[in-house]
Length: 575
Image 1 (cartoon, rainbow, N blue to C red):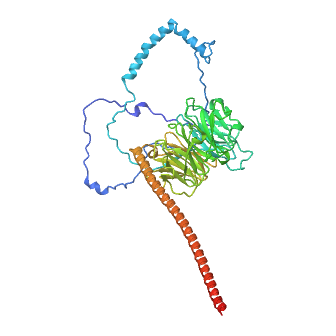
Image 2: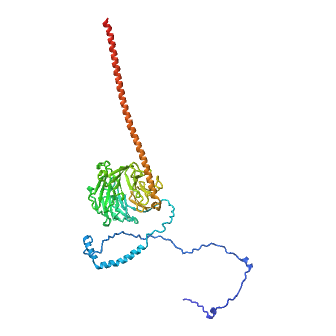
């Protein structure tokens, strides 16, 4: 049973409703302070309370799904032609153009477009968008930051059996891609399971190579074509030359024939400056320099044997390790050899003997790197044994500058493309050294420990900001150097030119003095030989004189003996 209790009340008992109206203010009560109540007042204890003005939030971590991107290529084909016209046939296209040019509609269209184009050209010419403002203002010298470099990415060999990166090449258009040649140069250490692939990496995607190059033999070196960014040429371990067009896939477009290729691994290959952009030349330890046209790799276009006696004998040839070609000197090139010699050559010489111009001797072992200074082509850098040396073409006896002997073997080096005083070297202990010869010549300006494995290859991007190093474990480390080391400094060119000229003059004076000392020693040796000859002649004369005196003495003694005998015999007869 549910019990319900109800209270009731009349509406009039609630009180009258509130009625509001406007009227003048009226003071109802005024209470004055009572000082006597102050004694009974108790002050409240003060307390500090923190108040948060913003809402409370919590932090959580979550792994989002990774976005995978693929690079795709698109081939552009010339279009706009009728179906019955083959754009590859020059006669058909010329005939069609002449036919179109005679059409009245074509002429009217050109006249209408001409006025529009003229208006746009006048607009472009009215404002110089390349105008430099405030050129006359004095530049505020920036505070020189200490030299530094940081690792951007590391590209690892995706295969289980790691191989050495023996060659690197930057993409010619902006340097957003890096081609790496993977090989194993240790004799008879290559396993059957070793991958033959080499890769082209996008510098922003270190997880997966963008293009895979599939040669028939391990690639020792490779080089991008500066005139066509889609084509590469590479030198293989078996001596062949391979040519790729990345638009046509991973397989090489063409190989050089085995009977006309190198007999040893191709350690260096470089594109030549030519009208067609299809010429390259290669070097190998078999002692040959071969010139190629990639349109026809069946046989080399030219051949040079590095025989120091200039007889073309392949058995006495010097093994080539490095090459140098400067586009501003199209007929000259230089070769670094296994024997520590730099051979300067002239391709346009009339006879093979005249192609070898001179040699520079300064290293105790193979010359692994050879490069001219991009600002001063007469001066070139070499790396071999434990030192890096800077040479002048005018001085053949010795280098004009050199580093101290390092604790580890130097394997590669190159100049900075933006600063004439800076060059880079890598060593077997995994160190990258950055040298600034204007700042300090005895020690590197910056030394970085890139990895624990030996570094074998090195390349600098064209803007001089990014440096790629290849290691023995198949890791290509990409580093970004600070702006101070990659920005041309004020008066740097003139200071480096003065330094090179001063060092060249010093070496010339020392060379002349050394030549005088050698001449004096030679003259002294010849004089000593003459003195010895004179002494020998004097000794011979004295011996002859002694023999003559002895013979005269004995003849006198015999004569005196005979005379005495006759004297003794004469009295006996008289008796």
